[in-house]
Length: 173
Image 1 (spheres, rainbow, N blue to C red):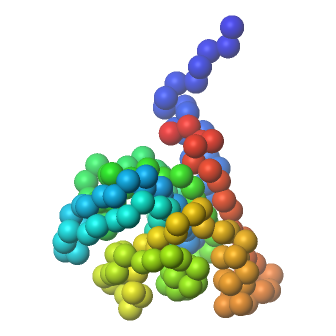
Image 2: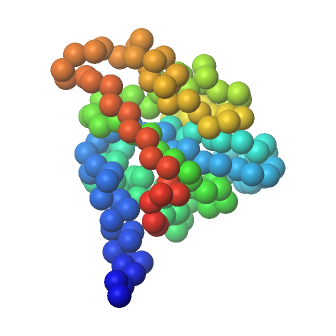
């Protein structure tokens, strides 16, 4: 009879697929019913049911694995806007791209063109972007995102577009 892996081993295995390299990501979350939450200096925000894509970058130590690990596990303390949201809404997917170039602002602008709505200033208090949290009625289209993003990014050997997608429900946390 085969034993179940420990919770710790399951968590380690879950994050092994996420590179420890720097990069840009979109954390996809699903909200099944209306929600009102307080988000630091933004104050109280109201969210409607749907899918939300939070765009960020992970350029520091541990790269994408460290940052997404924090988001997927859920924060112990709220540091960023997304921490307040993540405490109440579950992640269902991740899109990511390795690379040391900060592309979160480009990703946020491109996704805003595809989104059904935005949450103003969310995750964007340190930049000129209208938001880094975008709302979709249905699961956001990775193909449409790649196509639109491809118009803005150089296509050469040093800057290939590599967006990975995974359904979080298939990863044990």
